[in-house]
Length: 462
Image 1 (cartoon, rainbow, N blue to C red):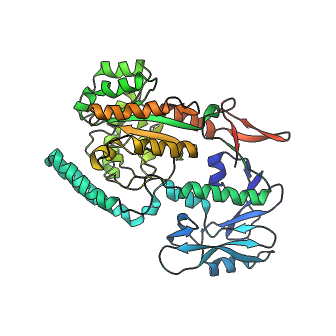
Image 2: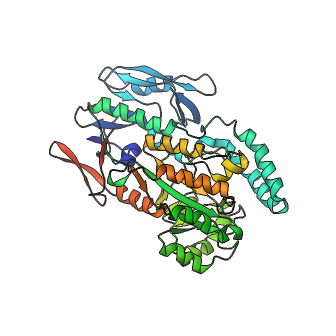
Image 3: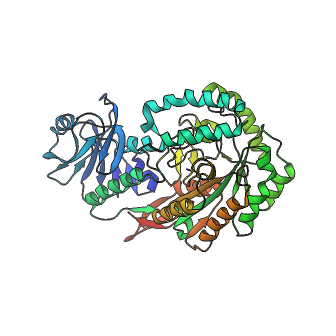
């Protein structure tokens, strides 16, 4: 359906049909050309231009990307056969630069940014830029935390939450910029090709959305109270994953075997839950052999970092099938930010399963919410968007009956939805890999899915 000079992340991600054939474009642009019309979408590769990263708005979409300003675009496009004009402005969040999406009299479009880089900037949280320097504050806090009484820790978190809640991007409890960018890019592709673009749906078996229940067991008290949350789920036909900390407490092997036999999943939640696993690459490499040892002992294929600490370049080094340390958006975690998506994605060979529902500790302890309404509201939003509702609850905190009742009402509110895929994290990761290894191919006048997902995948036109 399309021919590209280089891999095009949007089409790879949504599994739309295209081929890669290098060559034949206007330097320094890469081109994605519609086979049916010959029209192209151009975007700069920035292999030579030293453009700096910046924050821009394309309508309501907030972008973090290298952007070519109008003067630069005009010079680049001057050698093209068609006549090009700026058609839609990008507004800088800082400064008074002018940049635009350009269109030609032949019906082609030129973006002033590389959509591959723009998408990755959300996933990797590159938009945070210098805010990553706050890592030293997190290190200081986790060094001091063992000396602080529990109530003092909570008081500090509550006080700081008033500052965190003023964060403008990503919006909480939902940030739509990345998915709005997906939609905008598909709009341009429909314009080029003259019709909809076939893609593989996010979920198998025609399901509209997915629910993934997870638990982080931070202390021995949490390990002793696994049964409270497990029974709420088990009695309603749900299963979940339980992420344990190997060197903070002794995991009862009988409990682990019981969870496994009942269809639950076991994951690894760091090594000691001391906030230091990802403190530095040296620390991670030193701890990783023990982390992997426990993963093999527990037959665990999934990882979640304590306090959702994360580092884009280091996460694939963990060697797990999937990681679930990235929130879609969360200003209230010690490492605020988020990947801005409610769908899984790849970081190298690692499947990332974003945390898309507000955490129990955030709602009930930090923000002092009293009911399940924030959960139900976000779940309704995710259902509408066809996303993944991935929730963390902690048996360390969910001990009071009122919290168990809130959790029960949430599950009761979702249990009758036949469009919902109730899945374990390992099942979502396995599906995402089958989907990524499958493709949409033309079959006569229509389209079919070929590959490992055949028989369970459905085609959605974008």
